[in-house]
Image (tube, rainbow, N blue to C red; front, side, top):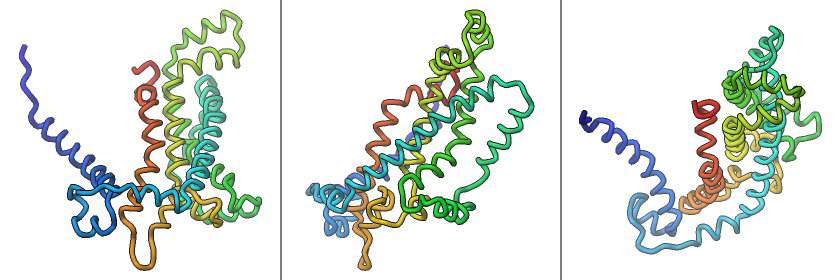
Length: 272
């Protein structure tokens, strides 16, 4: 049977592509223009002369240090999530007790608590334990807010592992930890990639927690460094867009290399 072309879907896809492509076009082209050229020609105009001075200025403003701090925060958040969530999700999936189920449901209440609602008591807590104005003071709460959703994602992935596989491992005499390491983790690569990318985004794009929990210039992250392009006389739009473009590159590379496992993790183990 011949299928009819879906013109409505084609129009919708084209409109969505334009919605996504136009901001990217403005961001990249504006970052390659001078402030004078951007002010005279507007954001959508095609640049007649290209310059990389904005990208040089990004690193002259101290973005090298900001990138290092952001990388440390991101690596710390991802490390904590990958260390805590897999054993936690495995215990939730394999345990049959009501206590574990109640704890899991209570744990998921963290999804309903926005960081803005607890930022003041969190500030006093971080300050009282001596972690204020340190990168560790940013890593710990950022990882804590990423744990509930990451646990929910990974438990969904682990629930798709058939009971027969667990029974086969038990017949072979495998212990709980051996089953976890040899069976569960290899079959949960998609879910692990998903929570790694999600937690990396939380660490890399975080703004409120670094803003409240740090003060010194040496502990600033990329999102805070964007303020360097704003002065009392105006905003350096090409400069700030160049900084945004540079800050997007690491996240884009992570997505490009992990996109297949990321999609499988969102769909379930084995892509089901």
